Image (cartoon, rainbow, N blue to C red; front, side, top):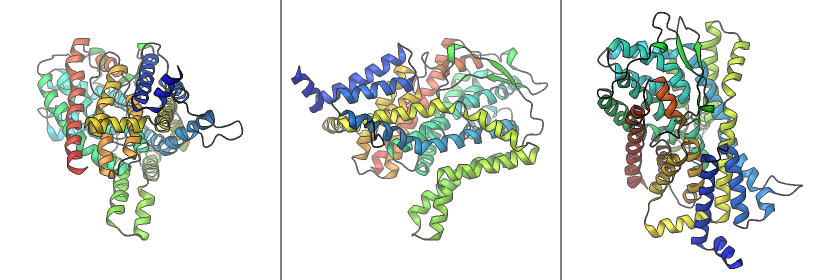
Amino acid sequence: MSSVVDWLRTSTPGLLVLCGIAIAVLLFVIIRIKLEPFIALLIVGLGLALAAGLPVSQIVGTAIKSGDSILETGFGGILGHIAVIIGLGTVLGAILERSGGAQALTARLLGVFGERGAPIAMGLLGLIFGIPVFFDIGIFVLAPLVYVAARQGGKSLVLYAMPMLAGLSMTHAFLPPHPGPVALGGLLEVNLGWLILMGFVCGIPGFIAAGLLWGSYIGKRVIVDVPEDFVNEADGGTTGSSSKTDEQGGPHVSGGTAVTTARPRVTTPPSVGTIGAIIAVPLILILGATFGTILLDEGRLLQVLTFFGTPAVALLIAVLIAFYVLGIRRGSTVQELSTLTGESLRPVGMLLLVVGAGAFFGKVISATGIGTALADTMSAAGLPIIVLAYIISCALRIAQGSATVAIVTTGSIVGPLVAAQDYSQVAVALIAMSIAAGSIILSHVNDGGFWIIAKFFNMTVKQTLQTWTVLETVLSVVSFAVAGVLFAIIA
């Protein structure tokens, strides 16, 4: 028996077997037992650490001191990186959504593209509004606007919905300040500026292929009428779901039901220029710091760019601007803005716990030597790390449905492999994009987002598989292909 244990703990094949067992157990408790991913990741991480023979003092510390333990450093390291960014991004999205910015964008885009170009307008609407707004909130706010466009155009709802969904999914999967890319920034230790840049470079071709080309093709073949009970063109009212999401391209509906609630009508939405400027502020500041680090010598200008381009500072500036321009200047009180802030932050807690537990799982993998064993095996097989990352992310996504779990688990597994190599920041950002791409592939019946989209857009299970599932797969494959080609050139 002891020889088997020694083999598992010390040999490359044994360590890989331990890793495989840990992932299998993780999937089992999430899929079959329905345990919350945060608890599942924590249990499996502790179990893997004990099975690999790590000393208890290294895993959890001692009764007197635990600050250097894997448990605390695993959680604390990643949460210190992402908590402020995700919190501020959530608040920014909430104020933009509540102000009526989506209506303003819709009116301008439809005016520019006209009736024939309405599907393209819906795609750009999802792409732009999806940058600061979570996936499920984007559906909640934009779906009624898609209904109106489809009613006016007289064509299948699918033709207008698919481009919008592709835009929302692309931004949510590939761009900060959304949770998945931000978590990957911490897990892989890559600058968010490069993640933003590579997110656009890899995600836009996927959006065009999935949202515009596939959306146009399938929208003419799957005919879906606008649901009568969701449309109220006379007063501009909207309806939506109060369901929670898994924060990454896949809403999760508690209990399998959604509650529809009326949204307040916004009679005077802000201008498109105002909304666009507020969305652009943090992106420009972060990119300015990134390129300033490359192009400028040490000096006061670089210090200024670095300070204001720190993601937390950049987002804080955007939130303060939004509070004044979209709130106080339009009649809101500080107390009302505080209430909005509190309401928007409530769903963030579980997300942070899931990411923290995933980072702890990654610390365990690194400490046990499993990461080194994976690197050796991958090297012997000739498999590029970007392909391995994509395959693992795809497998986890297809198996258990949650994109967040797929991202944090994959990032935790490949993080030690990335750290062991001398990759540039651009190359690491491309690896992050491959993980993000894998996390959205093949959305099907184990993904809460599948059912949300079926409900909101009046589709049967078969129609949702024909439209949304294929869209997510096209978005995933094309974006990964772009990342893979660029990685082959750069790395």
